[in-house]
Amino acid sequence: MAGMNPLSELRAFLRAALVTPVPRDHRDAAAVLRRRRLASAATLVVGGVVLWWSLRLPPGDPRFYAWTTALAAIWVGGAFLSGRLYLGRGHTRAGAYARPVVQSLALGVLLLVVFLAGGLLVGQIPWLAGPVNELLDHVRFSSVPIVLVITVMNGIAEEIFFRGALYAAIPQRWTVLATTALYAVVTVGSGVPLLVLAAVLLGLVCGLQRRVTGGILGPAITHITWSAGMLLLLPPLLQIVS
Image (cartoon, rainbow, N blue to C red; front, side, top):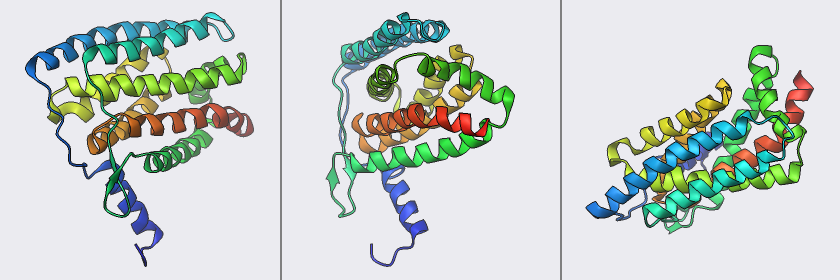
């Protein structure tokens, strides 16, 4: 809108991306909902165990590639076993609705900037930076292109499951909070407190996006924009400030 200042533009963007739902009518029959809940519960347990194991592997271990690829397959397989998934629609500046591509890219970049700013502070606190650097050793001692592909693949897979199947399996009043909490709980096994905090913040943003758009496309784009950016930019940033 003409005459809007940057702060007003930001507020309007965040309201459209995270607050005001797009009209939709996705209602599951009772039998479908039961299947979603059974498939989601089983997938959550198996996926959590595989994630815990993959992050326990030493940096550079070739099994890391296999286990993280298997993890993506578990998330996606469980999601599609649960039932139909939706891509969703987002608000446009013209007041219409469209696939939330540009909006989600912008939200992912905004989230990335916030996290990288936090990384500047973390890098100066040894007891916080230590566990993060140990996690990033999987990048430093591995093939960056392969890890990037796996990161993007797992980001998409996580959104298909957590903001797709699991979100649809939870009573509507609890969807955002419950999927955020469960997403964070799954990362506890990493032993990296900041990764759990990142899961809470990312899960909350993606959960709100899912509530607004009614689908998995927006959260998936935001997630992979953030995760790919963190993978490529956080290690050199931590080296500069350490």
